[in-house]
Amino acid sequence: MKLFSSKKKIAIIGTMLTTMLAGTIAYAATPIKQDAYYDTFKLVVNGTEQFISDTALKPFIANSRVYVPIATLQNLGIANVQWTPAASGQAASLSVAPKGGVDSAQLTALQQQVAVLSSQVATKDTEIATLKADKARLEAEVDKLKQGSTSSSDITSKDLQTLEDTLNDGRSYNRYSGGTGVGNLYFTFEVDEYRGDIEIDIYPEDEITSSMLTALKDTREAGYFDDFIEDIAVEATKKFKNSDIIINLYDDKSRNRPSLIHEFEYDGRLRDTIKDAK
Image (cartoon, rainbow, N blue to C red; front, side):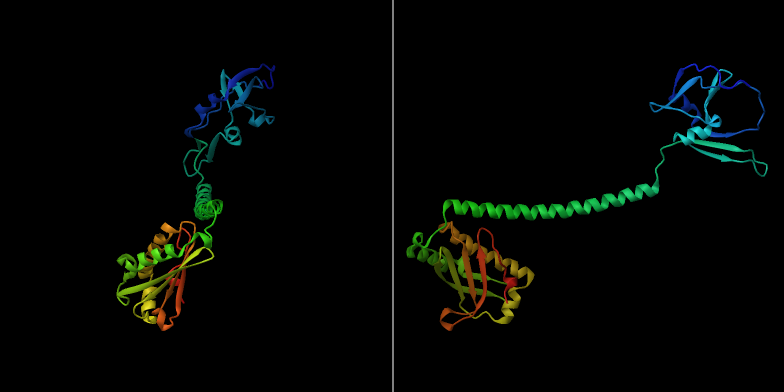
């Protein structure tokens, strides 16, 4: 047999190998003598020339045909190869399939990584939303400073009296219609200012008992009551645009020496809730 003949460089594209990549081969061996010619062409796989030094793994030409050892295909990552020896009357078989199947373990790992990244993205989205809200608040404060805060000299007693009359005369402000355990609450307002802030004291016509306060702090009822307080603050900002609004809620009439239930602050957004009341 003639081995390692002249080094003729005949380029044969690796795609010729695909004819050998599918199917299952089972046959009875019949020896055929033939001459094999090595190193007469280049083996190119996916655009890369492959040099194979092991004679047992070298591709060769015999009887005008190109042969590539199955082991070479597997070593180069081109095909999956499974050899089954003959046994129990069954002929030996060679199964060849192209590479590229899905690795279930790798797929599971990648899916877990995607889940972790999705969770991290959700967390970051929440942080971004919070930062945007803080940014909007700070920008509002900057605008307020640029315009100049309202000073005591800018606030007249007439303006304060006008707001007080509006709150006391308006049924949307002087009455709160609550649910079970609260009922209708009627309020009297006193308006003053302190260092440019507008302070609104709210006194109920009838005492707010501890049981009524507990009912007011119920999640659903608290939402309605906070909206009621915010409406009062918004009305105040119509006249005093550059002032922060402080609303003090008392448990009884002013002449009865009431106790402060809770203090609300409003600077474009209500910063407190009745649920925080002690």
